[in-house]
Image 1: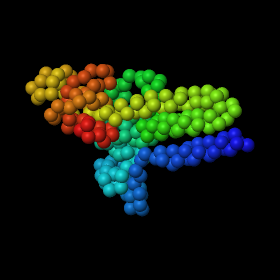
Image 2: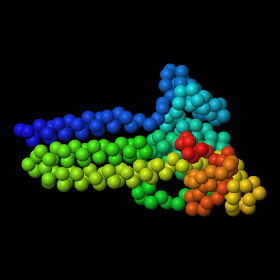
Image 3: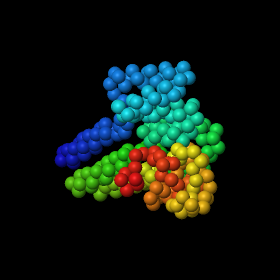
Length: 262
């Protein structure tokens, strides 16, 4: 009877944690209120009429006043793509995918735009693709939940006659999930330092000075990994592993950077 009570208590705690995490995962700040919804519909109507610049202004207004969401960023990216602003379009597709990693529309349009502009990407390793299926908060929650369940299982197992066997199998599974989730969180953390080239004819330089020799011209829409900063220049690495310095006003972070990245 005592063993059954401990198992029932453990099950109730795990169920409560799962419900809490599922309710705590929303990552988007959706535009709220009737006014924002009305504006969103107006923007959609303007886009359908081919008035992309007007629709762009409305979507930008909603973001400034009420926050953003995956669908809003997706529509904003479509407007930028239609008006020829490749860098801003790719930036907002990437932002939409940060909020909704499994959004096939954003992924499909992003791939088509990159292909049409010659911005070919190397195939990501399998684990990197799997890591992109969840965002940083979700991976972190999964790792934390696994740790809590692992601890509870060990505490409950101490009082059960077959506790050693329970701890061996369920504890091992929790540790495996925690390791995978931690690796996924690390991959997503690295993406906090990713930026997109939003300036035209941006040069990658050998050193952070205007007169420095140019390595190459970085095409608008290219994704870069931020490494450090010196004055008005940022040290970055492109998708092919080449590094150099670029003016900070020529790039925009996909996610608003922390203070140490500014």
